[in-house]
Figure 1 (cartoon, rainbow, N blue to C red):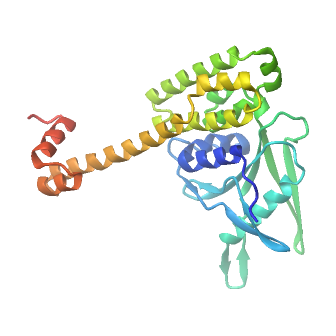
Figure 2: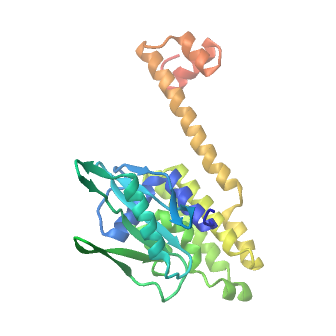
Length: 305
C-alpha cells in the first residue's frame, strides 16, 4: 500500500528531479552548509523504500540525494500541517537509505544516516525549530538534530535574496486565502507575482538560473496555487491571470527539448568542422540534404558562405 502524494509533494519531487541544483541553497539554509549551487553536483536517488509494519508497505520519500564529490547524503520532507509522527517517518526513511548504501570491512558494518530536515509549508505555531533524535544502542546513546524551515518566515524578496528559488512555488501557503477571497483582495498578490516573473527573467539573462528552471518554477507555482485555491473562486481567477495555466508545463518541456536538440546539432557541426565526421553522414543524422546541412552549419557557426 503506497502513502498518498499531495500536489505539494509532487511539486517538490518534480523540482528536485528536473532542477536539482536549485535544492543546494535550501540545503545551505537548513543545515548551515556552504555548497555552491552553480558548481556542485547533485545526484538524486530513488525515493521508494519498504517499511515493515505487519505487511511490507511502500513509503515514498520527498527527497533522497547527495551533493558534492564526497556525495554527502541529504533527505528533506515536506510537511503540510503539524504532525508529530513526521520524525518517526523520517527515521524510517533514513534507516532505509542508510541500509541501501552501507560499507563493510571484515566483521565491521558502517551505516550512514543522512542529514534530514523538514520543510513546514502551512503557517502554524506548533512545529519546533528542530527535532532531536536519540538512539540508544548497546554501545551508548547518540543523538542528532532534524532542523525545520518554516515558509511563514520568508517573503518573496527574502527567497530571492537567499537564492531559495526551490521554495518559490510554496510561497502561496503564506496568503490568507479565505480573507482574500471574501474581500476580493487579490490585487497585491497579482502584482507580487508579476514582479516575480520579471525578476526571474532578469536572473535568466544574468545566468543565475536557466530558462528551463524559470519555466519549471512557474509551472510548479501554478500546480500549488491551483490546488490551494480550488475552493476560492475569486482568488482562482487571479491565479489564472498571473500563472498562465497548464501551458507552463509544456513551456518548460519545450525549452528542454529544444535545448537538447540544439546541443546535438552543435555537436554535429563541430565534428564536421574538425573533419572527424563527413558532411554526408552528418546530414543523414540530421535528416536533411547535404546542401541544406552545409548552409545551416555555416549560419550556425558564422562561417563565410
